[in-house]
Length: 68
Image (cartoon, rainbow, N blue to C red):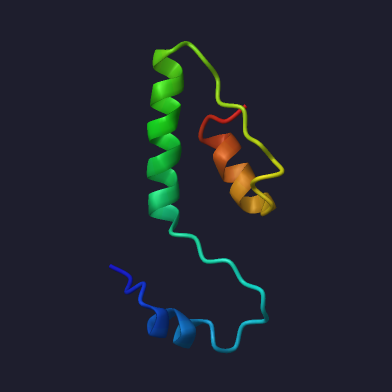
């Protein structure tokens, strides 16, 4: 399990150019799955607000997991 403390993240990102975004992909996938299940139960499709997800690789991941 990853230590998400401020100091751990600061050390991890020390040499990265800023700004930077950190995403726990396991949590993201779980959230996508859960909301996808809710949508499916209501016979709806997920419509991703692309303006809210500005990282193309994350947007692609969401779309591949069931977003429309």
